[in-house]
Length: 330
Image (tube, rainbow, N blue to C red; front, side, top):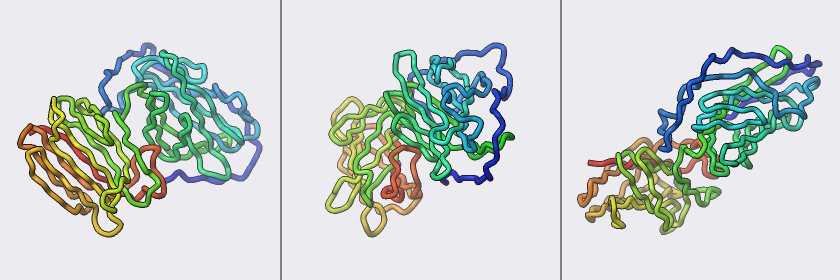
């Protein structure tokens, strides 16, 4: 659901003060994250500190007259300290920022220790939908974003009426640094009316190679690919990939998934030992395939149609068939 806008009758706003939401613990325990990709259940690690609300980075804000604003909780899960709009944020620490201005509520940069910088913007206009922006990507609801090699998860939380009368839109923003939710993004033809999208996830305890678009994409244990594709396969639009046998260029399981203009989405599967299957999938239907020449097992699932939490969603691909592929071992 997209965020909504509350209305308020304009009245003079009181000057905004720095507000301490709650005190930080006396000592923060720094916990370094591993380089492995985040599994869905591991994204929300505990945060050791939350500092007071800051308006730093909003120097242009007209705090006397603004009636709309943006408020966000920034959490650093990158494994190292970062600097946000001039304010140092240690690893596993959260800071709350807010600002209000008629054109741009809050602007600032996240600076990482390796020298990478990423621009952030938050805005809650009167005449259009509120958004949070990472680099060039505007997020209106929720998305995982990679920009300049750094990864962010942005989620719209809701509206909040400040006691001073300002209407804020609230966001949760988390950076995991170079550790991404998706290890690879295979994205093509996102504005076509028909196509397929979904994820390919390595649920084994070893590396898996997925061949897509001529490239070999390595997935470590727990990592996943997000894909959007509308390649042409005999007039139907979709994607084709191969899961290779461990340590080999031979295919363990190859699949072609398409979303025809008429009828159910179809997936053709060929295993490395020559077995073939063609199935038209209804929503929430799954089938599992095993390669007799290796220990590779692949489960294909058609999910219900829905938007994925990425910046690649468009009106054209909102109802594309969602086909997820999980790779396991026998």
